[in-house]
Length: 212
Image (cartoon, rainbow, N blue to C red; front, side, top):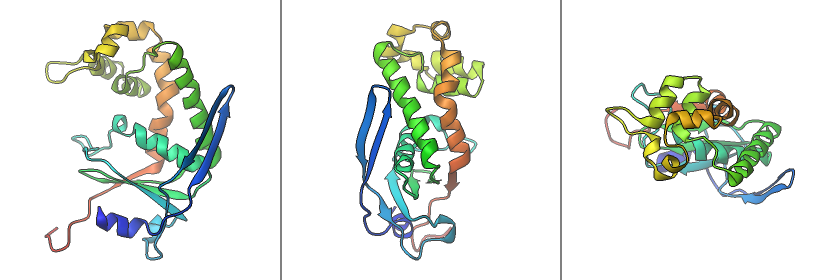
């Protein structure tokens, strides 16, 4: 982590104001934790600023692909940073990989944040049928994987084991009846598109003196 910090970030940058409105909903906050890049940063990482996050979990699956269901908080932070107009490259240091996050255009980030505000407001009125792993599978149009994610299998538990989900949607078909197939692509397809377009994995750097 110290090696990544040395390469990626330098002195602190000023925080940036984030103000968005979607109808009666207002998001008014400050984005902090931004850093200026050191002048010796690698050429492919040259953005005006950067931000660094630590994640103690593994983020890769058995095929060494990023698990999108573990990236929701990173996605929201990336949107917030980009929505301010900051040209800031993100870096997440996980247990098994580095994830570099290039900024999207400010107008696109603002539009996606407004959409999330809309769905958040809908969820305050009624529980939306969007358990994370299940909805991610549906956003990929994989109905079988979605059913397994919710109800589990003989080797892995399902999201329906969470009492809050079980109370509202006891079985997968209840999610479908509640509109899962229509809602999941609207809410989570933008996250999948972001992951495909803006994320790149890199091996963790070896500590000095250790063989590669």
